[in-house]
Each structure stands twice: as structure tokens, then as C-alpha cells.
Length: 155
Image 1: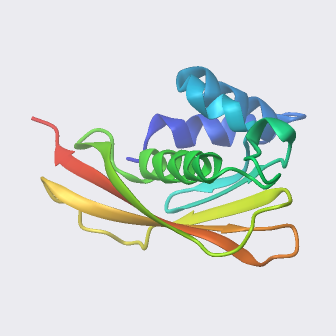
Image 2: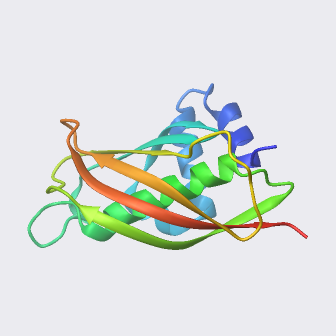
């Protein structure tokens, strides 16, 4: 069984402003994510899509989206898709690390996608690499992250 977060998303998505409400609920649970004002636009077992608006509060000194704001978006996507995918009755997860590549200036709204290949045999003490791709408004990839999630069996 996938995480209860996925079940919550399925209930919210049919409501008016459901994606926005669900995104707010995620940020309430993990408040630091609210600093980037994310909007989760799709969530399923193994896949997430999210958006982040380009605004002054996330800019660096040269007026582009700050590197850590992009990391925040990547961690949000990796965490939410992991929670929606890992069977919560038998396993749990925690972020372990992240490697990133800044490919182009991020100077527009951003769209991110993370995919966990399925089916997957869940192990105990497993490092799951969740790749996150971030694109600008023109569809050009500006950022890539590999977020390592440490998966363990529940005892």
C-alpha cells in the first residue's frame, strides 16, 4: 500500500483549487517548503509534477532563482513522490543526500518532475536515488538533482 499522502492527494484533486489546497497541506506538514510557494500539479505512485513561481523572494543577487530554492523544490518533489510510492505499512524513508547540477540560469517560473521507476522491489537499508528535473517556462532544463532516500523496513 502506498503512503496515505497519495490517498489524500486523490481526495483533494477533485475539489476546486484541489492542487493548491493539497500543496498548502504539504507545506503545513513541512513548513520550510512554503518559502518557495510550490504547487503540486500531479501525484501518482512513482511520479510527481510541481511548479514554483519566479518571484523576488527566491532570487539571488543577480535576479535569478536562487540555487537553494531550486534544491528546495527538488527535495519537495523527491520526498512527496517517495512517500506516495514506498509501501508505508512495511517501509519508511528519510532523505540521505542530494547531488545537484545547475545547468542554465533559472529566470522564470519553474516546473519540476521526479519519477521513480516501477515496479520496484523494496529492500531494507536501501539507497533509492530519485532523479528530479527542473525546467524553465520555455521547457529548457535548468537544474537536475539526484536525491538519495534511505529506505528501511519497519520492524
